[in-house]
Length: 455
Ligand SMILES: Cc1ncc(COP(=O)(O)O)c(C=O)c1O
Image (cartoon, rainbow, N blue to C red):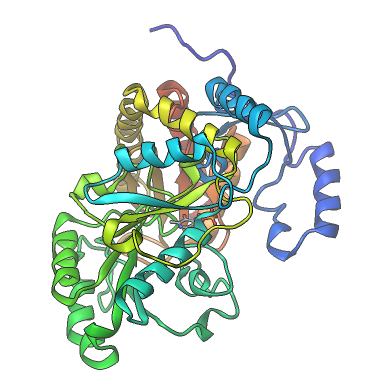
């Protein structure tokens, strides 16, 4: 079949190139600590088009970050741009919390229509972090109970309050204050590759964490009647695309019913097509009490997020969420346009094809390269997990970082943090399968190259 790709990645300078180096030095001098990351991201963005990024030195990379999932239809989808610009021309900036407009109402209706059974209402926010904080408020308000049960390894944002304490995706605490936040109980996130109190790689039964919950946490740490809700990502993204089993969901759901816990499903990253369905709740037949959206819901336009919930959780709630910028009209219009794009079934069909390609290209690496512990993919999301050697689960962050550098030299830019052993590809849902397969092969070549050096 002839190629449909008109422009391919190419990296022609050392990284960083001269212009990037100059800007990175300037950035280093003025930005806060964690943003001084030139070693991990050794270039500065010059322009984006389609599924490509161009740096200020003219190097071109395939974009497997897609603004961390917030640009799900490529760089500047024309329908989103047009709709958003028209709305701004008409309404300008407005505080929708106080003065509503049609895009606000239509977006809420469209989201409710797409949501799992039982979800009837929406509370607007700007960011996913605020959506998580808002959901916790609502769960406490509805139940009158203080405790939130959550999972180690998840990510929910970086506020100074709850999301900081439950964002445990990095090897160390993400915030020095996390441990001082009361009202949170954490258990390990379900997974089959590694299990607490077990040595070596699985496959393990991922409901073991619920044994721990029932046999230890509920017996010795917290009474079930004190727990307001369970805050969980349906697929843990920052933890390396961990997708729990149906058995886990069935047992968690029945615990929720038995103890009156609300299910707070954080779909900020998994929702709006990322996992191959509009919401990943659909995959396991989940009916959350609260469902959090963000990232992909922007359509790639402006910042927008929200808490969706059932009548019971939201109709008579008096908790205030959101703020000045929540759901300003142009952001809503962009989000509606994004949902129009998703409604064309070809976007979700493309994510299924991407999942198939990722597994086809990456699974063989697990048996071929000792340091590739596991390869996982779901929808438009793929992850390689590196370990110190065969039959080990000891994380190998240096190996991962070297793969990331090798992939960038080959023109592939994906999600990598130097302290982590996880390499993640999170392209737009619409990336061309041909460009995606090419990118996977570049990454596989980088893995082989690093493995040669590691011996
Ligand atoms: C699952 C999840 N929840 C919440 C957040 C926080 O969203 P935001 O960065 O929009 O505040 C993120 C961000 O990555 C996320 O992945």
